Length: 366
Image 1: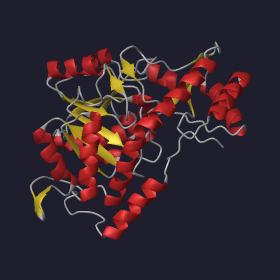
Image 2: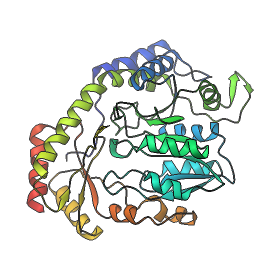
Image 3: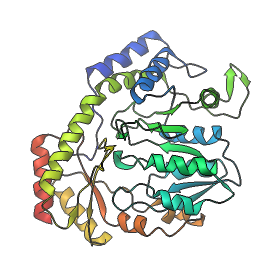
Image 4: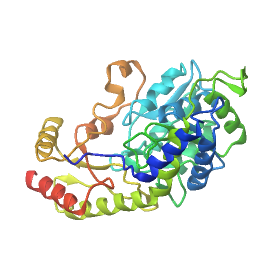
């Protein structure tokens, strides 16, 4: 089976882990061990941010950003439903209410005009999601946020290496939240990062990361245990160094698929809009005019041929049992996309021969 995504671990990561184990420093009470500090410094440079705070998951990164932004009970946070559950669940964990709005049918990212329509006196923040490795329309979103005095928390969990008009994720946001889960463009196993250009936010994030402590056993804020272990940080340092090559391979695989699948009239292939730099975390196609039954039949046939297929995201969050209670606008494009999209493997482990095989199978079955 050609997996939809897979971590790419070599001897360098193994040696980095061994070095940490031999050092005896596995973590730090304040989350600031030597490997964590080095990883944060290098990640700052990569995404051109002033501050990076390493944590133990992308979900932790989102939750911390919301806490530091003082999102609380009674507040509303605007976000897409067409994303992973963590984007919404962290809002609910603060006591606030998620307000789901629709997506652009071509980019699958949140529509700025729908954000504007959903704003009320209770709105505190916006969480745009850089989906599949493609940035949301961040400049338009930032302008809306400034107009209404809202906080922007960019969910960049899938966007390592993406750009928006030459800028990395986080440039047009108060916070950018990253994931290093095993399937991502780079990994630490689990793990995450919050980046920000605000000194005040960075200081609070570091406190929240470790039980609200600025000094050991002295909590100044309500916090949590969101520290990144030294082993994860050591892996991250190596993976970050390899990331440009990973991204180059993903792009080449994506371009090859697009060239081969472009002849299929029933299939909408992903585009890279002008001014956007796709990181190709997921290569997501759309079976136009189809329903979920037809799409799922095609997926079964592709899996029978050894091709790992992912569907991101069906159901969208607002149709999950727990989240049906929350406010939403009409989500026509979200619901339509959820029944038609599926993703093909383009990760660095996919060979040129496998890319051709994937394309040939898709064209034949169509």
